[in-house]
Image 1: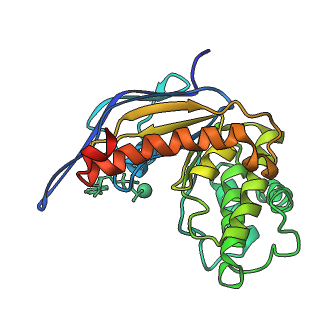
Image 2: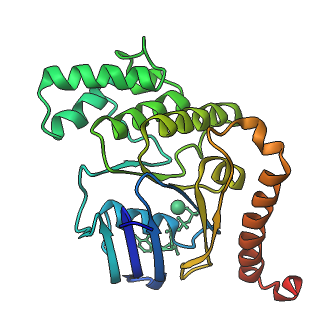
Length: 265
Ligand SMILES: Nc1ncnc2c1ncn2[C@@H]1O[C@H](COP(=O)(O)OP(=O)(O)OP(=O)(O)O)[C@@H](O)[C@H]1O
Ligand SMILES: [Mg+2]
């Protein structure tokens, strides 16, 4: 691989609190190439969000290295856009103002911010809802504003933590198509956490499966399905085989966590 966009080496994270010590990550190694879409899956509590928070600069690692374009990540920055599961819009600003706010923070003039925000509202299919407040938008619409905001200032990398986790199946499906459409046109590097294996396979170039806590990368499954991806591909034998391979890797971890070692023989 050429110089990776994101490079993670021997990353470890230990949380220490009054209630005890939790080793969330230990020896995580992962490279994400420029313009690559990597899905990250693993059992609940294995450390996925912790890894993403460190990449976002919202947490610091206890050991190891994490770099973007060769530079150590030391805090949040406009080179990374972050989208979380829960809607993180500012409720007192309209949809468009939420996007403009991020653009103003990245140093754009108010005229530039207004024009870029309008373009991004169109990109996510929200033309006509620019002046709506978050409380007036559905879950899927709020998440589209969050995606518009994260894309608007042209980060090198998008970090997404179960961005569609709270949505109903149909809206989630639309959002997946929207995201693949944007990604196929605009190309950017994405780390995408999900519990939905089908979603991971559908969207990703590679799916990384984590072990149980302390999390590290257990397996990387390359998804050699053609692009543009189409939803009908989910029915193909190739898709099914990849789904099965990722599922098996997660399943053996969740059985091990539950103490069913014999079921793995
Ligand atoms: N701020 C914190 N302080 C203490 N422990 C934490 C903190 N954040 C996470 N942890 C612990 O680290 C471990 C990994 O948590 P993390 O949220 O990264 O898991 P996850 O893989 O994202 O799980 P899920 O799939 O349920 O979202 C858990 O045991 C969790 O309790
Ligand atoms: Mg999580």
